[in-house]
Length: 362
Image (cartoon, rainbow, N blue to C red; front, side, top):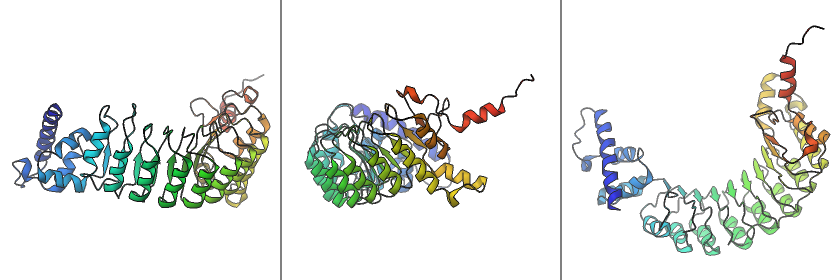
């Protein structure tokens, strides 16, 4: 820690000199003379390790940082992250964003409980790869951090579906939720709870949550009409019914991942295409301005890799309906890996490129 403080002193001194060069007529000769607003501005120029070290310099700095710091990232901490969170949570009570992504699982329930007990204004929390956490953490967050809007729990394999459902009854402002790989935590019961409680949901990652079926996805579609991004990769039980429900109810859907959903057939593709036609302004494009607006609002990303039951005509209908879907090199927003029978599907760029090539005289 001594080395960190030493490095911090050097970096802060450099920032101090830079700031003083830009200020004239202000009597600031030492660090202790710096106003709180200026201190926070200087600290915004250094990394989070230095901010933490600076908070231990004196009581004045500690109090200023405690009240002024709203964002903290601790993913750089490869050892003793749990102890670090336990010591920092009571200090940084105004945090709105906290990133605790780990390469090696370190966090335990008591650290998350400390966050819930002190950081009541938290809006964004990343706990991805926290393999040691249990339902205790989610129950604590439900009561202590009801203002959460963005939560990343990807690869947290010890949570139950009941705990996730409980969390949604308190954190009703959730808009972004990543549950990728949370096999035990995501079931139809979970999706029903999200649909009932989190009506503002815009982005949901359910990748490799193999327990969910059409019933869960339909509950989600009915309850979350503002859904923009949904990843269902590896959800092997879902069928066309799920996609039909999403096409009918989630009119703002921009990105849909169906990788390895091998029960998906042409019916799902045609339902997406029909929803696009239905939601076009005036039923058709009447001006370039309207076309541009629809390009921006329509489906922009679709992954149907390994969906081997699909035929070229159905996928081409989707591609034709949504101009933002591309198959051309460098812009692959329509991903069809492993679907050898779909090689003839092309986006509008192919036709435009063909028209631009001058034809030689015969």
